[in-house]
Image (cartoon, rainbow, N blue to C red):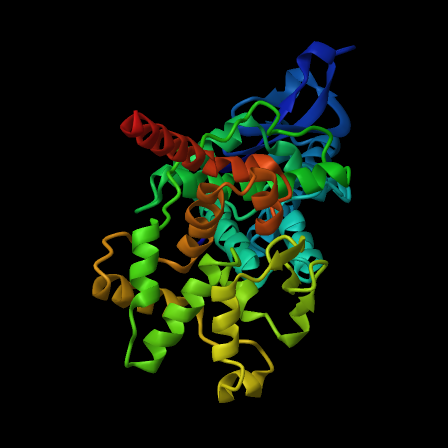
Length: 399
C-alpha cells in the first residue's frame, strides 16, 4: 500500500519580530495539516516582500540572491520529503524539518520496539505466543496505514486517543470478538510497557486505559460425560489414542503441549513413594508436580511399548493439536456429547469434576495446575458452590 500525504512549503516573514524595516525569513512545512517552522537565518525588507509569490520583489543583486536561496531551500525540503516517502519511513512536518537541518532524530518508533521484542523474546516465548504477537503486529501496521498514511509512528506520539482509536479499528475487523480485541491491545500494552521500562518513552499512554473482557464460563465435562468417553472403546487406533490423551489430561490437568513433551525422565518417585510427574508448564515455565492417579498410570503403561512413543522417546505418540481437536469432535459425536469438545476442556475438567468437586482444596488445585496466582484458579470456584448446593439438596432429602 502506497502512503499518501498532503505536503506543502510556504515562505513567510515574522512581522512580529520586524526591526528597522526588516523581518526574519521563515519556511513553513505542512504535512497532513501539521506545521513545522524553520528559521532561514536571514532578514529581508518588509516593503519588498510579495505575499502572493512568497518571494522578494525587485531586480537588485540582493533580491536575486535571496530568491535563489529560497528556490534551493524549496528543492531541498521537497527532496527530504520524497526520500522519506520512497524509503517508506514515518513522515511528519517535524521529521522533514529534522532531515533538512541534518539533525539525527534518535526517538524510538513502534517498529523499533516490535523489532526489539521479536529478536529478544524469541528464546523465551513459545512459538504459539510469538505467532499471536505477529498477528497483533499485522493489525498495528494496518491501523497505521489506514489512519496515519504511514507504516510507523514514534512511541512518544502514542496517547490514550491512539489506543481507543486502535480498539475501534479492531472492532470493525470481520469476526473479531471483544476478548480477541482485548488480547491484541494487551499485547500492544506489553510492547509499550517494555519500551517504558527501557526508558524509550517518558510516559505510559496506557495509564488511563482498562481492558474490558467479557467473562466466559469455562466449559468442562460432567462426571457422566467423562465416564462416557472413558468407557467408549474405538476400533480406529487414532481415535483410541485421542481418547486416551484426552482422558490422561482430565486426570493430570496438563495442557496439550505439556502432555506431548512428557518423557520417562518426567516420571519420578515422589515423597509418598508413588509415581509423580515432575515437569514445568511450557506456557509459563512454572514447575508442576502431579501425583499420578491410577487411571493416568494405566494410560502411560498402555503406550510404554508403542513404536511411535519409543521412536521419539516420549510417553505418547506425537500428534498435532489441530488434528487432535478435530478428532475430538468425532469422539464427542459418538459419545453423545453436545459441548464443543477441545483438548483444553480436559484441563478444566480436571480442575472441576476431578478435583474441586471431590473436595480437593483450591490451593492444592492451583499448585497442580501450575497457576502463579490463586486468583486464576478461583474462576473454578463456582464448582464448589454447585457442589454445596447438591450436598444441601441431598441433606434436605434425608430430612
